[in-house]
Amino acid sequence: MSKEKLCHIGIIMDGNGRWAQERNLPRSLGHREGANTLKKLCKHVIKLKIPYMSVFAFSTENFKRDRAEVQFLMNLFVELFKNELDFLVEDNVKVIFSGEREPLPKRVLKAMDKIVEKTKNNTGLVFNVCLNYGGKREIVDMTKKMIEKVQNNEISIDEIDEEMVRKNLYQDLPPVDLVIRTSGEERISNFMLYQCAYAEYYFPKTYFPDFGPKDLDEAIEAFGKRNRRFGGVSK
Ligand code: FPP
Image (tube, rainbow, N blue to C red):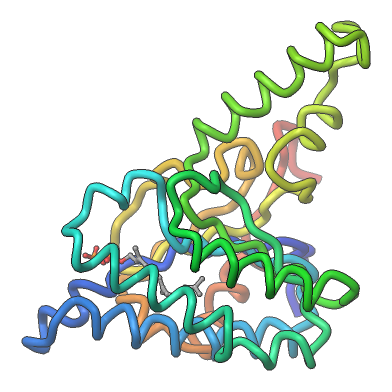
């Protein structure tokens, strides 16, 4: 059993493209396989009773990709949120999103709104999907929101503290404890910058489509052995 408490797990689902390319398959099949992996991981996280999970589904920068790949991913999101993630509704999962709505296509926004509505009263795992998300942009948006509140005399500058900042981000979430980035890349790439301030990082070489529940158990096991000091000294 882990000695460090794991409340919020973050996953940067990297390596779908390379998984496909190494098999001489189109990149889109890598994303499809990644979606299947994500479903398995969700079920596992529900079983482990981890309260929060955030995943990086699409960054604001991902719009720079080939038009066909962006189109494929948008269609995949619609398909998943409309039908394939129905087990989340039954399994008491609350789905929320972090990111900008513009310029996501209407059909994607509609599917997102629908799954949020269907799961809004659920009390189990909170599943935060970062879609059209950028960590720096989130901080910029939070800053603008707070300045507007100051200008409207809703809050005073002296009242601003870390808790208030957290509450003015896209979602009010606890800090991320463990970030897993698959595929061997060892960087954070604009993922939940504020929330990951004291996260532990785990970088398996495995491409995301091959990262199964057993691999997640290993990551959690490794996290359990870390000595988190939060700037203090070891006990
Ligand atoms: C990064 O791999 C992956 C993505 C940009 C897409 C992730 C999306 C899914 C797994 C679909 C399911 C998501 C949800 C939330 C329903 P990459 O394409 O950058 O891989 P590469 O680095 O090997 O090219």
